[in-house]
Image (tube, rainbow, N blue to C red; front, top):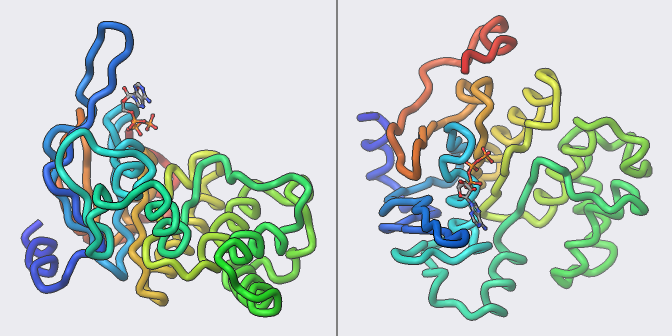
Length: 252
Ligand SMILES: Nc1ncnc2c1ncn2[C@@H]1O[C@H](COP(=O)(O)OP(=O)(O)OP(=O)(O)O)[C@@H](O)[C@H]1O
């Protein structure tokens, strides 16, 4: 923890939560999901938010990425206070600066891998040739160059998730958010996906924020924040990657 705090103090965080609070109301029940949460997330690192189901991980990710507003407190993303942006500005911010990877891949069944990756680039206004070049580069980076003409039905779960990562990566976002990216995958594919996310953080200087309750991912992150009941209980740098047997046997 001391090491994390020390290195953190030397760099400007790419993402900051400042006293973020969030509650949901269901009928008469009012439950606070995030309690006055403070957090700095740094560029070039894979930060993992771990914790049991229902502790507030996805809600925190949604707030930090501007998908949901906080009830109180603020979020600074790339120095921009998200609550100060109107809906259109927020959409534009997300389009230009963020990439998302979700548990369920979110691919269009009718499109080839290449078309899936090209699509957001055209929304961003890139010329066709440039969009194609970037899409091919990103698919090659995740090892899918030879499979770029295939549709989702012809791809394995791990390959589908790699298409989703290529789609996010091709936008060249400063911020990459991943919500349970490995939970639909077996151990080997899960490991490939987390290794790719880690490499993206290192080689592109991207801020990668990943939430997962999969304990196998802990050793592969640069920093691990453990959440429980809407609070961050610990913040540490994993000392070493897990052994092969640890990676195969989740302990929690
Ligand atoms: N839109 C909503 N309306 C009401 N309650 C919600 C809503 N979104 C989330 N919650 C509640 O907030 C709590 C935290 O949910 P969240 O999805 O952030 O947890 P999580 O840690 O990501 O869980 P999991 O690992 O199962 O995905 C849960 O109790 C959930 O039921």
